[in-house]
Length: 484
Image (cartoon, rainbow, N blue to C red; front, side, top):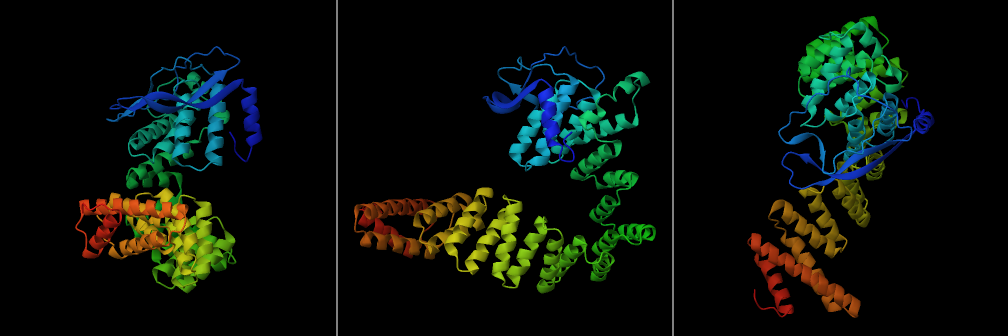
């Protein structure tokens, strides 16, 4: 597997495996009620060695999805006759390439589609116990975030944990010994890793008490404390931390956890002293506590120090930007929010706040472009569209302002903003009067036509004010259209 940056070895293994792979689209159905075939992403594999392989009888059971909407597998219209049987070693290479992508790419919806194609290509071949178990566990990690698949992820991870423990497994020892083949090549998680995946899946289902029992068994104390907090059992969490501190009195992270439970700044300060102010976690937590107490100047100092120690902290950059905004240090807020969007390009709240900071700095055109970027990641947010509309009006981008008004009508059904409409109408009228050449006249006529369409749509869904009606009447007459 591509651990510790062994990317070159991973690609070399692919070259030696006599295996060709490509992601491709094939027509098929994903749901039970789908009427027509649409493109589905699948992994095509081709083995130049054409190994003679047979399906293994001893492999972990692939738990059924049992969903009333989703099919168990993608139903391809062409069938899957071209699928080539791969050896367990070749399947391990496919799994290694999946892990390479998992570690090197952002986990978005597009990656999830590709990951599903990789894992489905491995699981459907049913060869190699260790390879199958590793692929099924990898699928559990992906599916625990999906509402329709999380129950299967829970059942699947529980099944593999039982197999690793030998619970309800009547397989002979000779067959069990064969399961060890390709254990290292497949990157199969050790038993505590499998239990951790199962516990995290239980948490995503809301079964916090059951997850707590597993974390206690694994002695994953940070997770145990988090479960106690979710269950509201803070006194048990505090007692556990104090017991652990007796065993590890110099552990600054435990002192930070005690501060999280008691909400006392002194514990974070103690953790900073214990680590010679090298504990980014202590600074971050103290900064967040100061935000809750509305002590923004102190919070900003602590958060900035935390970022000096560890710069890749998305939430800390966002909170630091918030503190800078509250302190009216808008240039610093811009810096913080820029770092947010560089770490997470789809963080639309950071884009929105970055735009607001640029407005405070008087850079409205730049703010408008940044707000447009925020809308790419959240196209359904009325407040952001309203801010974008106002910026378009301020920067005289009238065509964009009209489009933004239409979008607000799509979202809210009604939108009453007479002042904005009056400004747009006045600017269009001025453009029509000042048009001196064919190009400017064409632009003015186009804006006038779009504005009349907007007035027409407004009048069909809401009662117009007298100011808006007078503007509507004017443009109708100017256009020589007397049907008001």
